[in-house]
Every structure is written in structure tokens, then in C-alpha cells.
Image (tube, rainbow, N blue to C red; front, side, top):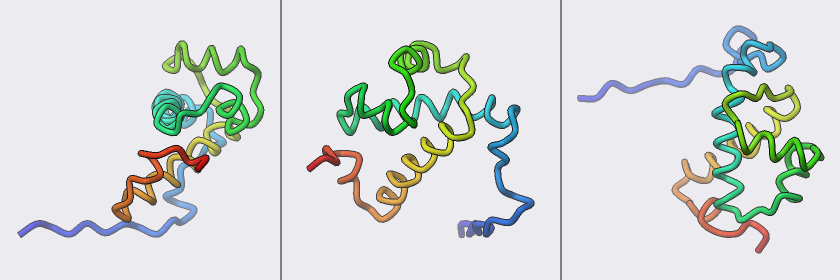
Length: 106
């Protein structure tokens, strides 16, 4: 028999502190790789990606894409990415890959 896992409700004690530089340093590489995976699946162009990331400069997007492992995102950027990832994950958990498999602009 498999053990059932419970998911804790968010409390001030178990929330991730995105204001912490250490936390953002640890999460930024995977957040960027996930963002670029979602952007590729959604067929977003550079301008659309820049808007979703808060209106960043083209050179910033290029730098993030070129070397995600050395970047530390701002709290705003990592929050924006987490919202996109959460939106896609919610659809996957409901059994619908439509959001990730198709162009969301339709």
C-alpha cells in the first residue's frame, strides 16, 4: 500500500522567501530553464518573452538565455516566472496538456 502524502497549506513558516538573495540565487537557473521551455512550447517570440518578464531589455533576455546558470533574477522576474509555471502546472494537474501543447494565442 502506498503512503499518501499531504500538502501543507502555506504559512509564514513554510513560504519561500523570494526577497532573499540566497533563495533567488538557488532558484534562478531552474526558473529560467523552465521559462524558456514554456516559451518554446508556446512559440513565444523574444518581444513576448520580454513583456512577460516585465519589459526587460533585449540584451538582458539574450544574456539570460545564453547563461541561465550564472544569473540571479530579481524578485519581480522570478515571481513572474513562477506564476507562468504555476498556470501551466495547474492545467497539467487537471489532465489537460492543451495549455502547453498548443499556442495560447488562439
